[in-house]
Image 1 (cartoon, one colour):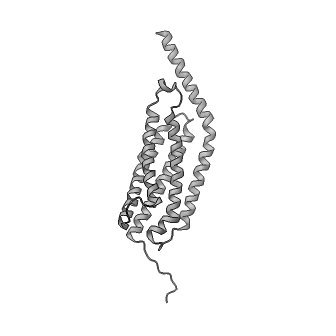
Image 2: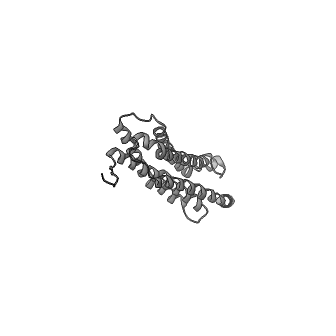
Image 3: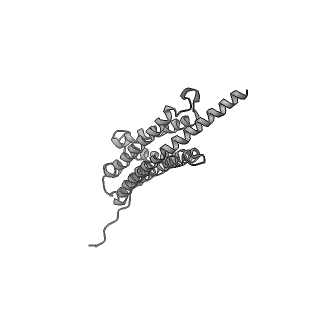
Length: 213
C-alpha cells in the first residue's frame, strides 16, 4: 500500500463552483470595498474622486460580479436542484439586485443634485446610497462566510474541503474593510466643512450676479 495520499482532482462542477466563489469574493469583498474606501478617503482631496469611484464600482467590478454570479447559476443548474431554494442562492440574487439598485442610486445622487429642492444640502438619496452600500457589504460578508463554511460542503458533498487559507482570507478582508472605513469616518467633519464652504461660495456668486444684473 502506498504511503502517499491519493489526490482526487476537482470535478467540472466543483471547478465552476470554485470560480463562482473566487470571482464573487473578489467583486464583493475586494473591488467594491476598494471603490468605497477611495470615495471615503478622497472626498477631501482636490480632484474628482467620483470618476475613480465609479470606474471601480461599475466598469471594473460589474463584469467580475456578473460572471461570478453566472458561474453560480450554472453550477446550480448542473446539480438540477432548482434555483433560489436555499439561503445562499436567495442571498446571491438579493445581492445582485441590490448592487444594480445601488449603481442606479449612485448615478442619481451624483447627477441629480436638485438644489432648488434641497437648498444646496445633501439630498436624501445620497445618504441612502451610503447606507445601502454598507448593507451590501454586510450581506456579502455573510454570504461568502456561508458559502465557505456551509454551502460548499452541502453542494459538492464535501469531498474536497475548503482550504483554511480561504477562511482566514475572509476574516482578514472583513476586518480590514471595517477598520479602514471606521478610520475614514474621521474625515467626515472636514468633508462637511468643505461642502459648506462650497455652498457658501456658490450663494455668494449667485448673489453678486443678481446685483450686477
